[in-house]
Image 1 (cartoon, rainbow, N blue to C red):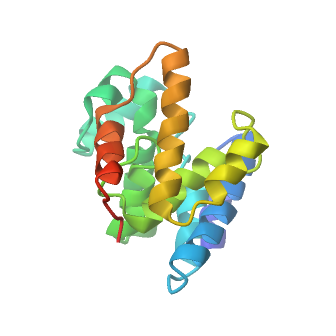
Image 2: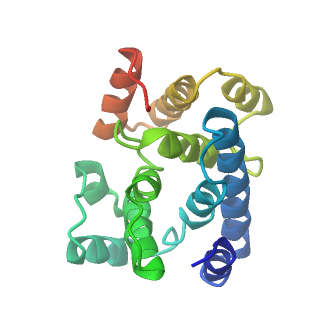
Length: 193
């Protein structure tokens, strides 16, 4: 299945606003991968970006039911807030639609919300792109530029986590355990390669 075919599925499955976000995330992911992993096929980051939120508008009940029926490993925070499962569901849906398994792409999509030490460079690029693509209103231009100026995906992801933690504290929430592990991994010099 081609990028254009997947793009059309997304266009017909989500709101115009969500489709715009997905399109911009695809372009941002591609730009980050071109910078840090230029050898990667350019369609792969585009597919990750366009597809990552295909299930974002599903109800909590539908997301949890789908995840359970498809044997998705569910984090504690995902049980508590099933909306967080939309990446995991999207990863399964991609394999169903394309009739192909692409573990690196599926891991990137699966972990674009919480992040993971297992998400790889593509996952790191998608994680960052989803947070700062140009239509996002929660991030100030200065903060967006500060992230983009970092010299590695690891440093970009770390700064996204730090900024997200500040937001979570302000609304009285804690960082997810998988995100905390990712932060500690990066603080210890961990690499996505």
